[in-house]
Length: 157
Ligand code: SF4
Ligand code: SF4
Image 1 (cartoon, rainbow, N blue to C red):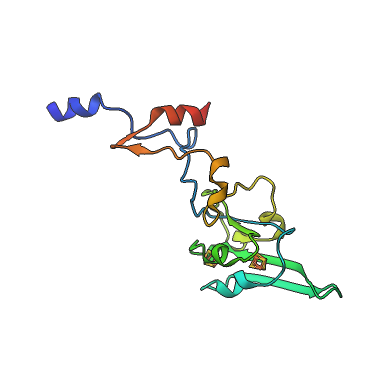
Image 2 (image 1 turned 60 degrees about the vertical axis):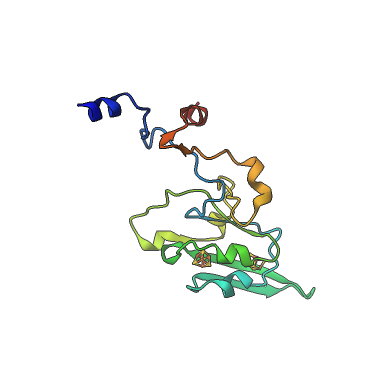
C-alpha cells in the first residue's frame, strides 16, 4: 500500500497525446527534411553521402556554368534519419525537420518531393545547425523522473 500511495501522489509523467504534445529536442532528427532551393547549388553532395542512396537529384546547366536543380526527392520510407546528408551539405541548404508523425498507409506516399521539402509548414530542427536553436522551443524534459509541468502547460497554451 505504501508503494501504491507513493505513486498516487507523484506528479504525472504521461501526457494525453495527441491532445497534448511535449516539445522534442531542439536537435531532433525528425522524419522529414527541409530543403532551401535558394541555397542549393545542385552539387549532389547530400545524395553521394547517403548510405542508403535514397536521395534522387537531377540537375541541368543554365549556360552560366551553374547547376539548376530540376528535381530532388527523398525516399523517406527507406531513410534511417542518420542526418549524414544534412551534415554533408556544404551550403546549408538541407535541414532535418522536427515532425515525427509521418506514418502513411502506402510506401509510395513516403516519397518527399520538392514541394514537400519546401513546404512552409515544415519545422526546421537545429540538428547540424546549432545556430538555429534559439528560435526553437525548449524541450519538455523529464527532470528527475518528472515532467516539468510548466513546460507542458507553456506548450499547450
Ligand atoms: S538521413 Fe541518412 S539515410 Fe536519410 S537521406 Fe540523409 S543520409 Fe540518407
Ligand atoms: S548537398 Fe546541399 S547544396 Fe548540394 S545538392 Fe544537396 S542540398 Fe543542394
